[in-house]
Image (tube, rainbow, N blue to C red):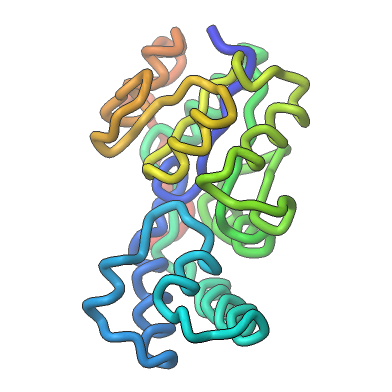
Length: 217
């Protein structure tokens, strides 16, 4: 068993793919980025790093404005954001078992709080992009979360759905659980299987899954 579990947010415990895609499409139209270039948008990477790649001509001031605009497009687009299957049950089971956990996200704190609220997930320890200097794939976020939980990174499990986040977890010295068919120390098909691998399968099962009450479409 691990001393603590550190979760990514989008794509790991929160389903927000459609909202993220819509925000990038709108931003690309405003900033004259061809739709084909959006294929270069990397999952799990802070938006400022992606924008630097898509619009390398922007100076630092313009980059900050562009990154802020990209986030603005996401803040209020929450109608189909919801908790991924098994997420509420797994987080509750960790609490019951006395295993501390945190969320480490490339979203800023405002967006993270909005999406977590839309998903009905209560998170006590959150490390957002504006809480650190360097975002994923840098390990700073995961090291910060481990410190906040009083655990050594080497004793933590990082749960991720993106290569950048997995790289951050490995660089922090943690073990990794990779979703979406990616490669990690653990490779669960979903959060139910992760619960079983963590010895929490009796508390988290598909048959006991609660219906989605987030109002998401």
